[in-house]
Image 1 (cartoon, one colour):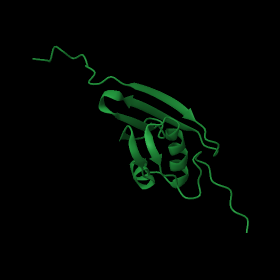
Image 2 (cartoon, one colour):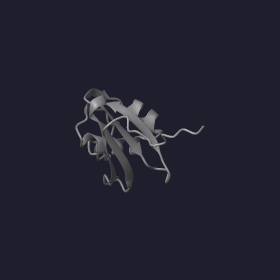
Image 3 (cartoon, helix red, strand yellow):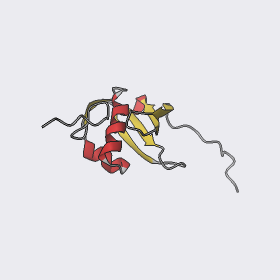
Length: 115
């Protein structure tokens, strides 16, 4: 006998928003940010594959987000990591964010020091 109750039931209440992020590095990022207050978590999805992308969930209010952890979760290089971390910094969901050496908190490369 088939299951008569085929209606999906939400297991949480949260908000999800899709953003177009242009940090000034010549790249456009489609990012989805979802916040789940009752779980003290948020998730970030980088929609970089047309039909999907990398996703990770983080603790809200965490004191630190490490660069290498972020790069591992999103399978990205330092330039993309810096840009996406700058996007994330706008929301104040994490205490301190580690940016790659040579990049500012805006996600852009710092000017080279003149010799």
